[in-house]
Length: 101
Image (tube, rainbow, N blue to C red; front, side, top):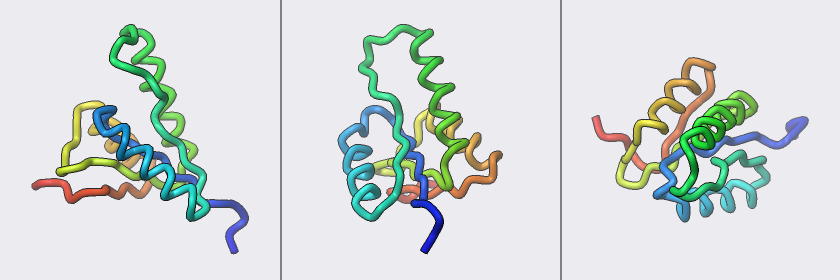
């Protein structure tokens, strides 16, 4: 048995909030610690977006691996940056849907 539960950071577009919530639930039910994007609607200021973006990178730092929630293979600009950051940090990255070539 591991010393602690696996820590998984969820990444993905806010448009997939329902799917990220479902992934959070599923991971939690199998005993993982889940780090998810901060909740914010589209009405936040640019400074707040930058703060949340930087905070999410720190969540990736804490994680053992990253799960990208990407229905239909969609990867937006912010999620693409998060994937690149995770890979640079040596974090395994998996996807809920295949990524188109």
